[in-house]
Image 1 (cartoon, protein in one colour):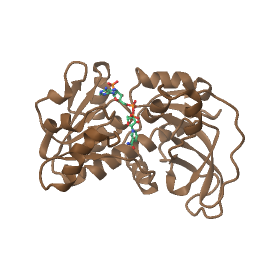
Image 2 (cartoon, protein in one colour):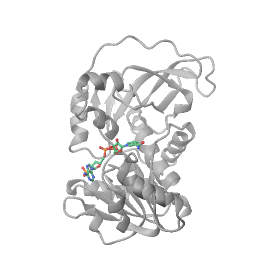
Image 3 (cartoon, protein in one colour):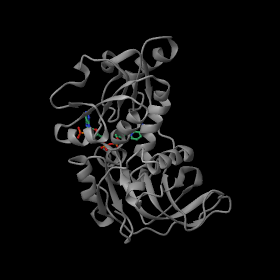
Image 4 (tube, rainbow, N blue to C red):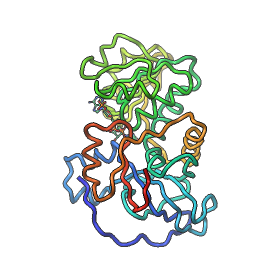
Length: 308
Ligand SMILES: NC(=O)c1ccc[n+]([C@@H]2O[C@H](COP(=O)([O-])OP(=O)(O)OC[C@H]3O[C@@H](n4cnc5c(N)ncnc54)[C@H](OP(=O)(O)O)[C@@H]3O)[C@@H](O)[C@H]2O)c1
């Protein structure tokens, strides 16, 4: 579990970097991976600092920053080493976009990693917008990525089946999913139905096991890294013509994609779903909540300013 420690202030931003006064940072499944055991606390501290996305106010800008100015409210996706659950953070302008005008800091902080992953998986890897009346299966539909994915799929006219734990199915229905599967009652791989797109947000399904779920020109997109099991499906999928395709999503901190998410939020087409906001002093409790009962996003407020 993460702990709060005092560290030196970050240096003044150089080049195209911004210094942000962080107001809020959400907890992602990716944080849970780093803090979920397996690695020793010392190793985790060296490779990763909790928090991959942030929202707050720009305090100062490096000389090459062109898109933002001090006082702007921005949200950003940080790099692999994280560091967002802090009072100050420095990142490059290409990782950031303006906070949607209709959003609190907590809502904005819920968007970057989960929203970008859903967007880049569905609109990017699965080319969902080019498919007519697609049938989409979202596994992990109650989670951060899943909640965004259900909404983004519905937005382009997809028929969405959401898979989640039974007590969270009402929440998934509220996002717009038309069909619901309790993963503890039914084996997803044995649904006996075919989908144009299967998005496995927790990355637990093996590609071969997902194959019977796919239409002939369907695509399986997973957040899982390409291991030996998926390479067996990925490589032939890339080479052959016809038949289902298999893809992994590697989320990119693209400013244009973040701005697209912000525009969807301001247009009323995407709803940030913040389950609970915890103060920084209760960061451990925030992580425990994500592991258990959370629906949508859990946010850590890192400033004294109310962010909810
Ligand atoms: N490849 C990339 O670039 C990339 C980027 C971002 C995230 N990720 C990965 O994506 C994963 C999900 O992230 P997230 O932020 O959406 O996490 P999250 O908010 O914790 O949501 C994950 C959801 O998956 C469901 N789940 C958990 N175990 C499951 C299982 N065995 N089978 C089916 N569903 C299960 C849970 O829903 P229920 O409780 O309702 O069952 C949970 O709500 C994380 O592992 C993260 O590391 C990868």
